[in-house]
Length: 60
Image (cartoon, rainbow, N blue to C red; front, side, top):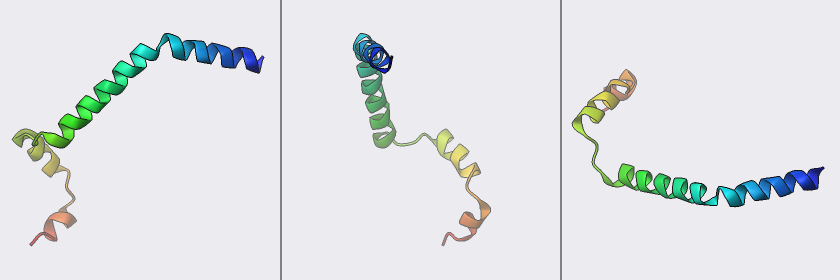
């Protein structure tokens, strides 16, 4: 039974390999954009709303 299940898992992996590779590439692309693009002003303003007041009081 375990051998049959393992065989099905391997078969599923082979059948969906192209989709998995495409998803992996998309994740890499989006990660690259997040690390290389400057944040928009709107995003920065939204992020600043979530900074605790303690952190703000510690800034020079």
